[in-house]
Amino acid sequence: PKVYSEEEAVTFYNNFNEQIKVYCNRNSLARWNYDSNITDFNLQRKLEEGAAFAKFKKDSWQELIKYPWKYFNDPELKRKFKLSSVLGTAALSEDDFKRLDTIISDMKSTYSKAKICSFQDSTKCDLNLEPEITELLKVSRNHEELRHIWIEWRRNSGEKVKETYKEYVTLKNKAAKLNDYADNAALWLGNYETEDFRDQISALWVQLKPLYQQLHAYVRRHLRLKYGEEVVKAKGPIPAHLLGNMWAQTWGNIVDFMLPYPERQSTDVTPNMIKQGYTPLKMFKLSEEFFVSLNLSAMPESFWEKSILEKPTDGRDMVCHASAWDFCDSMDVRIKQCTVVNQKDLNTAHHEMGHVQYFLQYKHQPNIFQRGANSGFHEAVGDVLALSVSTPKHLRAIGLLEESASEADKDAEREATINYLFSIALNKIAFLPFAYQMDLWRWDVFEGKTTPENYNCHWWRLAEQFQGIEPPVDRSEEDFDVASKYHIIADVPYIRYFVSFVIQFQFHKGLCQAAGQLENNAPLHECDIYKSTKAGNLLG
Ligand SMILES: C=C(C[SeH])C(=O)N1CCC[C@H]1C(=O)O
Ligand SMILES: [Zn+2]
Image (cartoon, rainbow, N blue to C red; front, side):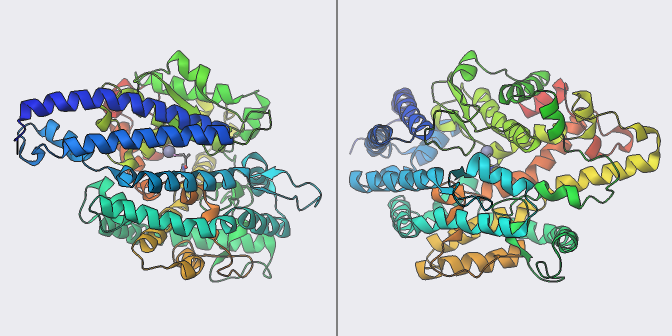
């Protein structure tokens, strides 16, 4: 058979790269249209473009593997071929591919359309996860209302996709095997290109667990003080519905009744955001301005024209879960977020803008290199900026926090700082076990260690072992609680966030050093890299 030379490989690959950009653009547009407006027409268009994209990738792959890329001299050409030789789900037959795309679309549709009835008014049954249910979980301090919401959301989301999910697992593993991986867990872990990746994550958790346990104990005590000893036991797991979040993954929403120094200023700037007339658009403009202050890229005009920055009021069904989009043409980048004016969504806006900044910074790369160094990197960029934005110093600088009168008083300053660090811990430390167990469960499922009849039991065993939480009512295998979380039904891996929540502090420290903010033992928690072009240069 003909041996293809490295020169011919260059020509082949450049042509492939030009073509894949076109298919990728068409596919992204069809996916955007479906996620922004869930209709049968948009589903059919999405399936068609997805099938065309998969067919193109599979046909190109037949050609690509004829090149002896393992023996190429040029490392960049070799890596392009190596990464492109993993076909992913496009390796499936046309029928299987379409079936898998349909299954995931249907699960996303079920999740996005799910509604529950109000606890206060059982005739009001139009509460969506975003914004109504999320807001209720943030503000309600009625543990029976919280239990109602917790149960009803799971009954209308996870439970409905139990059968479909089994077929999803089968098809994902079938695709993985067609790519010479043992199962989809191995394929997903390939993203980190690190042999002992799972051991490294396990070692990180062992390191961080003691801090989590201290936070867990403190929070449990204050929940017991708030809700009483009938509702919250002095020892053991925390009831999952009391932590201010549907999945107990971040606990920042319950900080108000457990601040270490309650008489000190809290750094929840939501009231000031509302008082100052913040809009979703202003939140994203604020984030853009931070990136620009680092000498990084501003958003293209089309970003502001084409993004969806708040939930449309035309009653359409759409995927509200925040996301950032790259349309593969080195121009069109967007965010879709059903933004509410509050501090949590201001952080999420920075998170999503971090994805878009990454898109803009690598837009000149070949398509195959337009991805994070690993997926954790992509998730970390925006959060790094949010760490600076969240500091009392920065919030005061942008007028979202009043100058604290007690500035002069050293003790008051120290106590306010403890409050700030505690609120960061509620969002960043509390999150770690949840992020870990999300893919521990899926790795076990894809590897066949957990079978469908044990799906829910295994999830709750992990939730008790890692998060140290328990359901407010008994659960059975009729329930399917893990699928009440977007990423499970939307086919999005999750260990990326565990990686991100660790490396974002390492990035923050490095950028703070570059910004000269750590001189004379200045504490990391007061660092704000705003306007530091040195930090921006490092980040870019
Ligand atoms: C904001 C996004 C889109 Se990439 C997200 O899914 N995040 C951001 C942090 C954790 C995770 C979640 O919401 O579960
Ligand atoms: Zn993200």
